[in-house]
Length: 114
Image: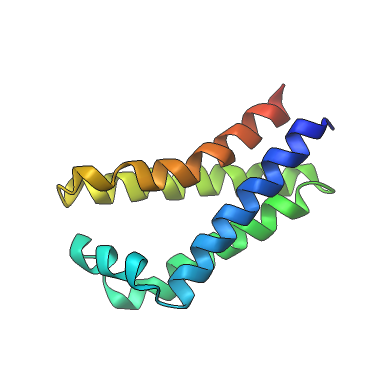
């Protein structure tokens, strides 16, 4: 296990965990766009829980690699869905935000595979 893999994985987990906490705490800068995109309020806790589980899964993956890979793939799919949601809402200026959170997750997967 390389140092770069560990650093990128911990960074990815921290970023995704922060994103999950922002949903749980209903940070205005997170929930207003969700409402604008048409994401039902009833989904918000589930979306936060999915991100939180993914963040924990990335960290667990440092000792149980299959868990980390599954968490990484799940988060990559999650953020792909987020990009699709932003595109469907025609909020093109917001596309970089889910990509920003997805980048270290994909980087972690790539470093694991190398």
